[in-house]
Image (cartoon, rainbow, N blue to C red; front, side):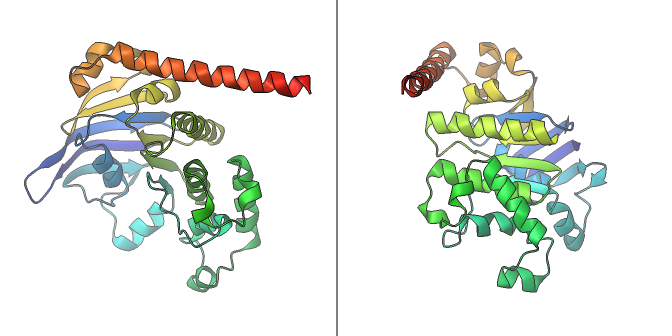
Length: 275
């Protein structure tokens, strides 16, 4: 379980990015983190694993206080936190398999990582994960030969290779088309449900957050202004978080995209059955 208590972040400029942020995420729950640009979403995710140092407050992972750890102890804890990035953060010249195995760098001796000689059980697990994310046929391809959706799947497999106790996911669909975005969100939620992994997904697409997450936290100017079920995210609440917008039209457009995708899938099945 993740526990965040009275978390604050004030930059040297005096800007307050987070203000008394408090919440918990139990095992297996997928939380969608929404809010306008500058609301503090990315800062919150990075404060949780201390890529950004919080000014005050407490972050606990399964009762271990992360905020008070030394650098050495923090490196050990970060092995338990899988991070999935918007821009994938892959090593382009390495193969898909090598990128996935980089999730074990915190566990193996330096000589193994330098020579890329990972234990057999790590390699076997990487193959299983690539199969799970639908990339088993691409293990030997270079990362720069993949599509955006495939790169994001590699990032998911790499994070899972760490054996994480928590997933932090920063804008996983920002660079993807609507269909691929839904596929990636569906995959993330399925994996969390299968493994009992808690996850926080910083996501700009409100409709995707409502469709796939268990819970939504809305940030506005560094403060939590909504914390509840996706079904409770009314137009009034969305206006409080983002300001005035035609939310009905936005949801209608998203529903039309989903309907078009479903119709295409049904037609493909019909054609296959007719062969």
